[in-house]
Length: 66
Image 1: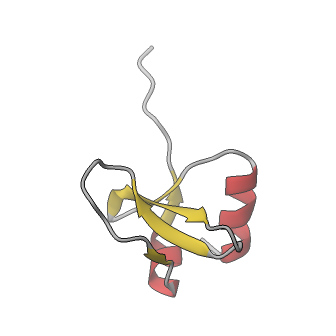
Image 2: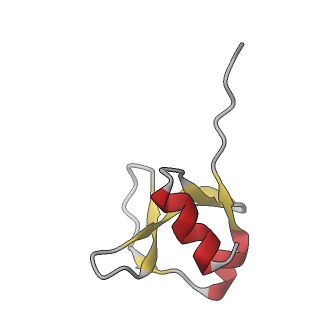
């Protein structure tokens, strides 16, 4: 995804995760920079989202049971 597409998805209330690591999500920090954070209880250092992270980004789609 592009930075613009990620920001638009986040503003629409979507959750953006990494395709290869769905427990990591991309969120904006206090200054508007995109950072990678963990959704798990395990400790994980928050870091700036790299270009590779942005390329791996997808919108999280929960599988609903019908």
